Image (cartoon, rainbow, N blue to C red; front, side):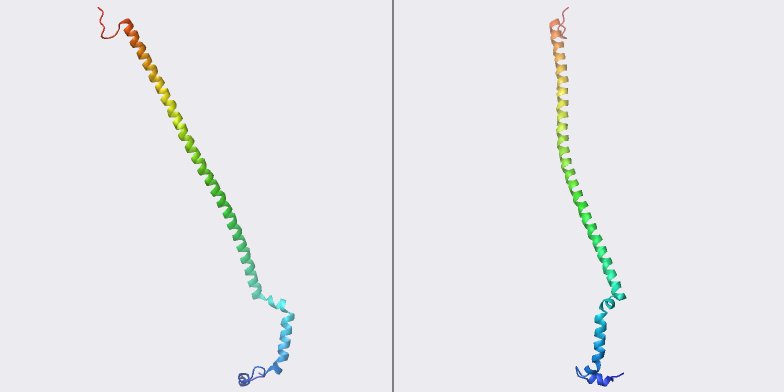
Length: 138
């Protein structure tokens, strides 16, 4: 080696500047002119590929989340509409039950009234003819 360990340890900040300047200049020139090709070595390409894959996966996940949120919103709207429909159905069924009960009650009252009328007709007919149980005409 051109420089001994002792000389390297004891040198000042710019002591080796004259000897090292041409090497430094050629290295800087090489790396500045070939920066694009040098920056794309295998490790960097692998990392860039991983970054692109990650961006693709993240984009897909974001799209899936947006679709899921849309489906959840639609489901919430449908469930709210179903709730409203069930409340309307409940009110209508209660009203219909009441109407059926009223019809049934009217029918029974009509039947009872007819029997009462028939009973009264029979009683008045029996009184008129004297056929009541307590009357003995012998």
